[in-house]
Image 1 (cartoon, rainbow, N blue to C red):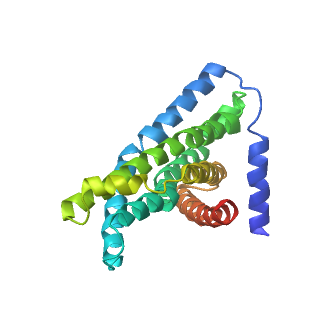
Image 2: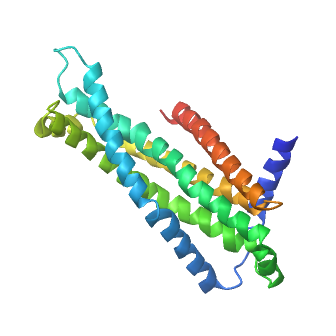
Amino acid sequence: MKILREFGQYIQMFKGMFRMPENRTMYWRQFMLQCNDIGIGSLGIICVISVFIGAVSTVQTAYQITSPIIPKTTIAQIVRDTVILEFAPTLSCIVLAGVVGSKIASELGNMRVSEQIDALEIMGINTKAYLILPKIIAGVITIPMLIILAMVLGIWGGRLAGSATGIIGTSIFDNGLLMGFKGYNVFFALTKSFVFAFLITSIPCFYGYHVKGGALEIGHSSTRAVVISCILLLLADYILSALLL
């Protein structure tokens, strides 16, 4: 029953967001602020994990390919497809669910507990449209951009690791990248990133906005938001893979 009640409140949250803004300039500033927080704020962690994911992928793929009749270009092909299809969108978004999701839930939870949200509503501001909608739109726009960057850096990290460890030369790796490339894989990864971006922004917004109590409840709400975001993200990953691949 609790799950159904929360799902109903989650749907109601969206119903209250889409209204004519009271002040377009104020909403635009809030949107740009969220783009900066979510996109620029997550840039560092995405760069670091992407390079290491690609590097580890190259080393582990080479470790598993022991047959001398398999060409080394196969390593680059496997690294490329693995990074594009799974590692860049899914692993990056799981990390973002922790970093961005906990920040969003804590921020809204603090505003709710300190009665800042109540004060905004007294001033006639639609708090769902002003506080939640810019976060979701900013996430859906900036997170797919981060995923594209993660794809590029992941493949570059794999190429760098292959060259540094002597597993595969850069020219052979480049040849392997071009062999059998499917543009549909990039489309699939971007489709996943849009869905994941929506989940890891809207769910923390819901739990942060509906916090009741004090500082302890804010912590519980943030943890719950991150856990549920990660579970739904993995479920969506499975469903999208079954439907689109």
